Image (cartoon, rainbow, N blue to C red; front, side, top):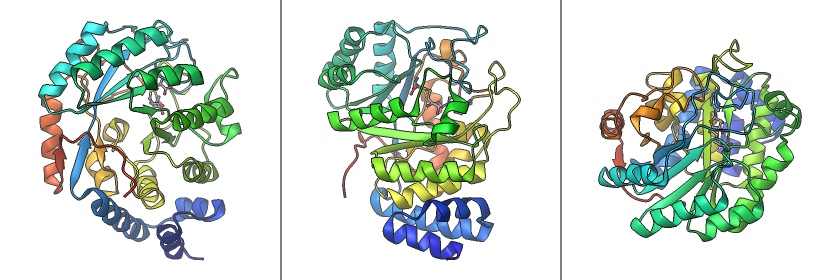
Length: 348
Ligand code: SAH
């Protein structure tokens, strides 16, 4: 089967074999990528028209008990500046975000055990009582099924937990031995079973990644059927073991966004900050390749640079109001518009 036939097969069946996917990713030409992009854009337009959902990202703690080799928040990074927002500070981010039109708040942090189930449930309940028309998304890493259930019962609607890579061996080159892909996947299945709109995802071009690994990522997404999917290029952080590694390719990230759009037509798919960091027009390109979500930062500006996952992260100096203005303009420039809908996952 040639590459155009593989793309057509994916559009029709929403799946291809691991070999076909790896071959397509490794050898796709610019013309074929444009063919794929158009199909992905058409699919996104059919489901969301030219509307782009926004999520207000609140990075509420930079403490982390994990030691992932790629991440600037890893516990071994002694240069990392650690901070934690108080409940009041988080609520104040929500307040200004609400005023700016945000109807989804994404609470993201390192794995910070200071935030017990009680503490997190209290924050979620408070946000949901103050803003009953808003969705709360959590992105706080691996926890027990009981913990996830408590957070869901407290009112959290969605949960983001990228699987990072769906290959066991590759996973072990990115993480210390106390972490496992098995546990990560179990967390994702638990989240889905509990009823969260669940997001998986992976980095593109992380060290040691092969095209076969990326094919595995796509097959895992097909199996999990997540409601959301976060994909961004790997970008090195100077104080990690991967400081000297190369960044992931923007072109390959865009191809993967398009493939995910064809495989999961109604998935909520962000054009990520990492993509915008790797390429000045990365987020616009992401939307044109099938993404339908952007996630501007609502974190207090005084802590922005301290939530440092990778080097040169964009938008660390801007107030939320400036970010949304800038993004609105960027989306308009390519014929799209930011909307204030909650932007829940829908089957149709
Ligand atoms: N502790 C939470 C949030 C992690 S940060 C969790 O475990 O889910 C969110 C995402 O940033 C990670 O899942 C990872 O895919 C991405 N990330 C981390 N370091 C990165 C880097 N150096 N380059 C690009 N993306 C990175």
